[in-house]
Image (cartoon, rainbow, N blue to C red; front, side, top):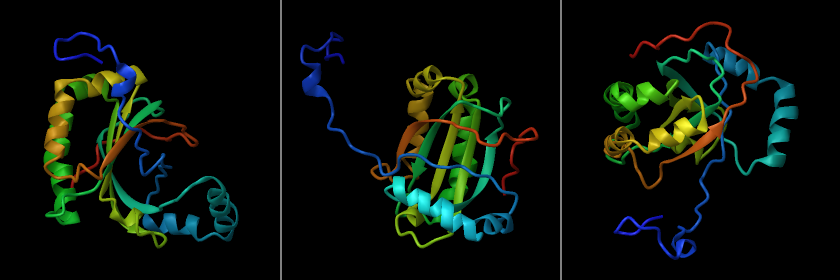
Length: 204
């Protein structure tokens, strides 16, 4: 921490912001080819008996959102070790459809065009929620999830310290509710590797 004269402060402990726990601690990112494939997994008797029962012992809350995945920058590595996850809630004046359209087209193009993105980001995907597999008043409020992947934690830190990141954040705040939206850095654990190369998703 530095003061207005760019000198180290004498009382750093007194200046630490109050800790605010985020609403979400992480997420399982599972890809399917179709909604039917998703339903076949979630409707199995053993899923409720084993998976859901196990989740209830360790998680405060669980939301199961069905989302369309749009890959803006495909991964060349297939096992990117770190991600920056951003949970988005739209501005009240925007419908979910209007938010997702602007986010996918104008905002995604802006993020992908930045020099810092080209330098540090190894994968960029957007998840567009459209349904839930269970009643969930909290989860249904989520309007989008950004997943930016990186080769190292240093790359994450360097990325969010750039002017490009500040520009991205400023543009994002015109379409999201910045008071409710949040982001965190995640360690990725790939259980099943992708079998084929990723491609950029055609925008619709």
